[in-house]
Image 1 (tube, rainbow, N blue to C red):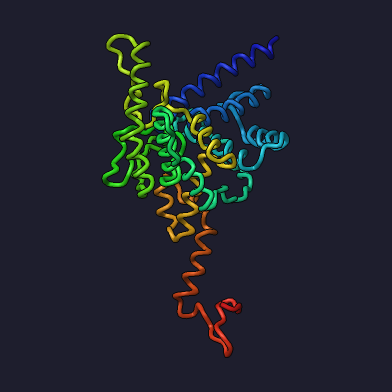
Image 2: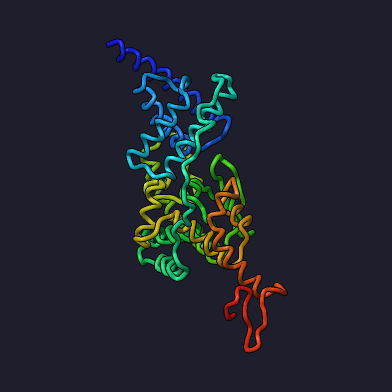
Length: 338
């Protein structure tokens, strides 16, 4: 009975602490609700582990963190996921340290699990072209045509701008500047960035705004008017992409849209395809980092080996020592026929 009461008290302390941290993430760090929830989910898992050891988050020591990571490995959690959870714990205890709630960080001497930098899966150029061509096929019924134009614009935007799903669903019509060929995107941490768009994406968005969105807005307005209170204005009226029910499009819906276009694809795969194809065609990693909205260049460096292939070609063609001539032909710098 005593142990049960202690666990109850510990759970209440941990819950109160997590609520404070949630406020810090939202207000001071400006993180989006989905990001906050992901962090809190990892912290709740650690809090439950600590409670089983009759402890609280504030009193955690290095052995608790090490035992937690060992427990995750024993349950088959991969190294990348463990590294993410450890990174979350480090951020949490750094906050506690700066807020003077603790005097020692229990994660300071914990080594991160070694993870392979695996290049994210991407689609080949012809696969993306085929997907977008299928999406461009017009429907005959006005309502179906409006949704088809919307779906095509979403797919073009995902690939042309390398946007995240949440970034696409939160776009407003005022974020577009198609005459300048760009869109204002609000990414993680509510950070804004300007994303340039190509001709195909601009044309798809212009056609959707001209022929598709007005039809969807009329349907949405009529449906909202039948249930809305007098004088009540729907907050999502200015959203760029509208559903037939007048509700904002969800991340899950966009996932289903991409799956319907290509069963082997996903929205994040289109984002990686955008970055991969840019690097393969000569883009530098700094430009790709700015386009994707990566806070740290190390995140973008997963595409480094693609850039190295391009670098070898440029070196071979332009460096004075890139080629070495032999009697019977040209030999490249590594001693193989050019």
